[in-house]
Amino acid sequence: MRSLITFLVIVVVLVAGVGWYLDWFKFNKSDTGHEANFNVTVNKDKVKQDVESARDKAKETTENLRGKIQGSSPTSKDKQN
Image (cartoon, rainbow, N blue to C red; front, side, top):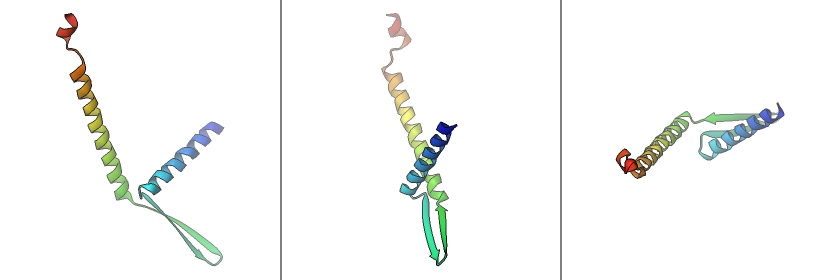
């Protein structure tokens, strides 16, 4: 159970760090005397754009690798000879 909690904390910290770096999240603090307010703003459009971009790049890379594998593998005729 302890390892599961540790894993989840690491995932949350990584997502928050990467999200902050990619401008998915903005963290704001306002202090009004005895109260402190923390706000998190999520840029949904930026997240969606980055996810679609990553998906397209992964698809393109997969297709390129498949082409290289199929192009370099011998055909069934070559295997018989």
